[in-house]
Length: 441
Image (cartoon, rainbow, N blue to C red; front, side, top):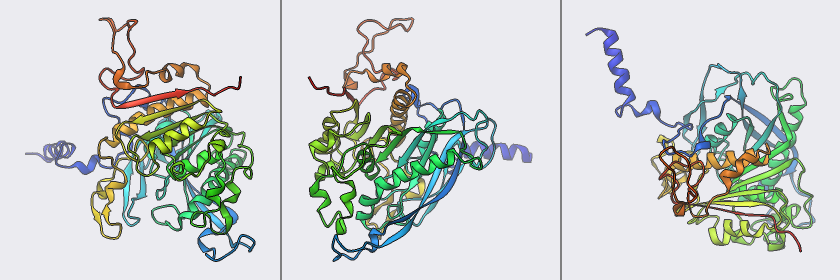
């Protein structure tokens, strides 16, 4: 048998079940039952890493636990690492992997996607909307990479933040996350705005920060809700476990500034806080940008009825929607599929590392595809003002109740009420509820 035949047999063998490593840890998977707008867009994708520093920030980790509100707080220069996905020049070639640490903070893995490292930007120099992504606690800038890469292919510049003290490798005091998360998000928005005006930057004239969306998961969602206008309750800011030396007061209702005019919409996956009375009903009424909330009905971290759903019901001053994965837990829609290397028990953590990513009921790729679809719809509607997206938002609330009624030519009958963008038999186990801004009589 010739060497060429041997090589061919080996490659065919490895593409099958016996060499799964060739297909492991992909962030760009699309299942056959993925909804319509989960598909990748028209742009090639590039990805770059950027380091920024927010000077003279409160050093929450090193505050003396006995320090009073009147004492001078320690300060430091707060470093943040950013991952930036962007439309790239067609035909770009190069490294298409991300080197990421997983939940144990010790194991580094390769994530395989479509984005090419340091690819030249798309040649059009068109200023595109900005999408900021903020991970959970703990997490990192790659946790939502399936979503980041996907929406960049559709004409967005996507910036995902490594939040210091909140990553797998820098996990520190939870109070640092509470204090710094909203600050980090707006600081990065400002930094990208500077780069958009800098002729030496690859983002020069290519990103429109006046047209920004903020996507947050869990603690990232907590920060996003604050930046959307909901100041914290006095109970939260006076809780020394949450806020040493009164450091959370900057986010308290009545103390926080107006919502940044550049922020046009928020998408919050399982935002944490409402189940701990972080916000009052009055505070939620101050939210002033349209919001899409995404959650699992069995979320035991952020809560559902008393958590995410309560936020959705309470933000009465804006158009808002709630996508629910029935019977899913806290990982609904946001985290990437568990890397193969995560399927191991970690003695220090006390659990199998994969549990950080997976759900007991739903497949991660399926959840990611559904999220990609709805996030695309929402961003196109509220950042690009594409009214054609309304057909994907006007749905019967219970997906299981949707009626498929099309004739032999594929034309819809009057009784057809199936979720738009979902193929027959694929809109199952979901709820999508939408409420309009309440107006005073």
